[in-house]
Length: 481
Image (tube, rainbow, N blue to C red; front, side, top):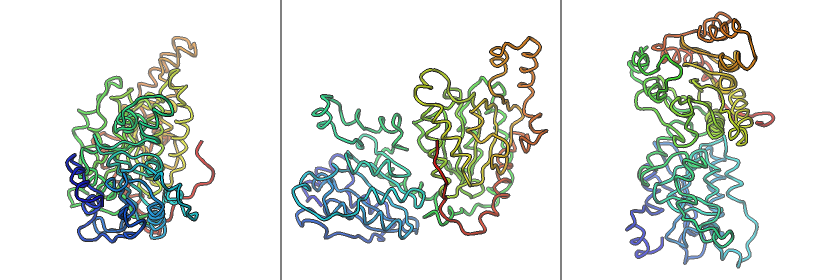
């Protein structure tokens, strides 16, 4: 690595070096390195540690940028190693984990001619939907190296240390005369809250490594297999009434509540894993287990914008639906929203396109799909949450107080200039709940909220016949809007 003096200075700041990160991440004594002799002998391993090992007994490929050597910059040999492990991930159908902390391509590369070689980003682009990919941003990551993050399925940033940018503060100042700190330019707040490139923020490297191991536990090793089943005891798999939901969900649709309180009792205890909690927060995207089976949940959050979907929330949900669907994970929608977000800012931000993409993603999904109207789902806010009848649902349910319509009845009656009798009829129909729709089998059933978990477990049992045969990567015709 960078030698004892550099390593000592590095560790004084509470940092975990490139090799120690790999050792901590993988199962003990399973790391098999490749390319240790790569590059110039004066630049150990060409500032990039790479190889394979096991995580919970399953093979994983890993690459770790070494900031103590040439600032973790990418030399010619390191570029080849990066492409090599991405290519191996595709060929061997194995997850890829990248640990980023480097300055991008090494400036001196331009002084030495070298033959054309595969590009690691080309290789990583081909992994999408074939094997799970994770990037852990451990420190400053710039230029070409940082692009591995948005190419990955799941991105973690280490708080107070990590930053990502196309170009760092010195280059920004030189080219744009903008003075900005690395935290403001590309710190965890910039990417976890605003850009959405970072899915989760970890307190330290150890937490980030544990988060990565947990994330991978919800996924199969590749798209030719299914997510591993847990072995639930009989009490987990048995029917269970969720009595607390009667207190959690207020009957009045104008009163907010925390949808996480619903999710925490709905799924198997201790299995809730939320992605992007700080971004697009009017929708919640989680991985969890139900009866030991991995599920993906998209749920409106009434605490934020009353659950209305803005551009960030719709884009977040769209990506989550596509990513989990690529690995054959059943999808659950819990709808409680007044629609997609209205207003001039929302329109200018592109809510029509973002919500159309989310709708198309859920419609095209080939996994078992379950919808529950918890309280309300107006207009396109219901459609994007899989509420439309016969839209490939395994089951479509509503709580007794479910309210639906193109727009809220009071607003619709007023804007259409309906007479008083018609307006009253519209309001009464809306308040009457989901019974009329259930009578036409728009809903399969109207359920007691306490039966939510049991109803979804029944749908998962119904869909389990799909597990009998082999699976393959999902192939779509055409493209999202």
